[in-house]
Image (cartoon, rainbow, N blue to C red; front, side, top):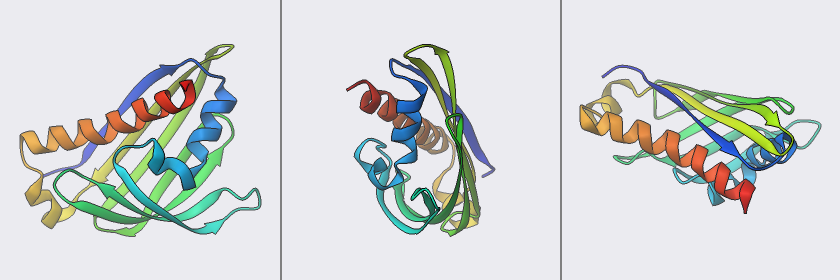
Length: 148
C-alpha cells in the first residue's frame, strides 16, 4: 500500500471571498464535509482562525484521528499538515481561483501515507473508493454549502 493522493476541483457560483471564508471556518466544516466527523480547535491565530485542530474522519474502513496544523493564504489557499495521528503522514490543501466575478474554482487535495496497519485495510478497490470518498465529499460539500 503506497501513498494515497489526488485532488478534485469544482466550480462554485459564489465569490472567492465567500468560498474561502466557508473553507476557513474549520469549526463548522463537519456540517458540509462528509468525511469529517468531528473537530476540536486546540489553538487559534491572531485572526481567530483554527491553526491546530484535532479531527476525526471517516475513512470508510476506519475512523481516523489526526492533529492537523493549518496555514492560510487569504483568499487563495488553505494548507494543513498532520502533526500526529493514525496515518503515517497527511498533508492537504484547498486552492481557490476566481474565474470571474461570482464564480470560483475550488480544488481540494490530499496526500496521505496510511502506514502499515491502516494500509492493510486499504487494498485494491478499497483504496480507490476511499480516495474518491475523501476527495469528492470535500469538494462537493463546499460547493453545496457556498451555493445554498
